[in-house]
Figure 1 (spheres, rainbow, N blue to C red):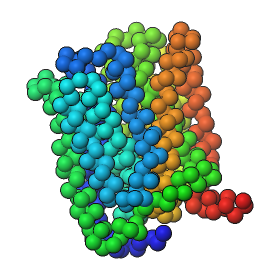
Figure 2 (cartoon, rainbow, N blue to C red):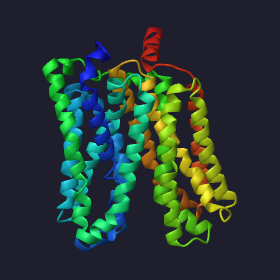
Figure 3 (cartoon, rainbow, N blue to C red):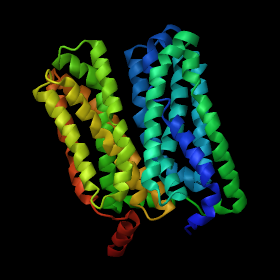
Length: 409
């Protein structure tokens, strides 16, 4: 594949910046909007705790599956047209959930919108690398910050919107962001097609995704993503119950601390990608993220009643590993094709392991009768990222590692 001179893309960078901002702003709106209004939805569409658990399990599963499938889609369509597909899927899913007459349709709409989200997750790092190759850290900061906003704002506004205008509008209104985001991406797709660049830019080679298994850097990045994902999804599923058992907090206070956990990583998302691009030893950021996880878990294990908010805050800082991994996808690949494949590989492996977090905590709780063993398990499973940090401390590129492995073979 021939890499295109970034100067040829200069005319499209303003469109790309608008497209990246709008896509990131709408990327995670579907993830956390159902649970705050589940009771109101259940009045019209009855579903119990199992149904709610199924809806909660869908995001990491969909993200994992479509992280692995997205490089093949990009190979056929190119980056820009694949983003158009992702946004259209998100819009359709939001609207289908809003008009759902029964639970099966609600699930189907959720799957469709999460397909769009999963594909969009993978596209962000290679799109940043393509249009802003000298500003990967800065643009990754923009993306991760807006993704945090797109997760937090719907969960805050869902209940007020549902109370004022009904739960269907509370689910469907977020499609409007996707409609707006479509405009720059359609314009970019048309521009690439007319210039002929759509045949040479950003298309992942079909064999590259499987070749990444030969790259220690790819596996190390996947371990960092998995550690962040595992800890975050386990906490979102079980933290209120853990606090209810190990402290005297009431459900309202436990819910507030869960919000603190979710917001804790927001400041880190502003600076971590920039630091990842500038530090000679990126391992320091990974060791720091693991340290936050360990400190938070140890606090909840050894002194849960003392400064509970501090332990939750520290554990909530652990997912700073996510923006580190997102930035390094662009920084540890030499080509657009490599960036697409690496993004799919890292997020596919990471979200697959992350989806097991809530299940493993539940199984350990059932086996032990409490949350001490699950917390120990969460602590232990955060430690392998230290090894990954050691491997990622210096600049290595996945394409070089694949070529070296093929040469040895």
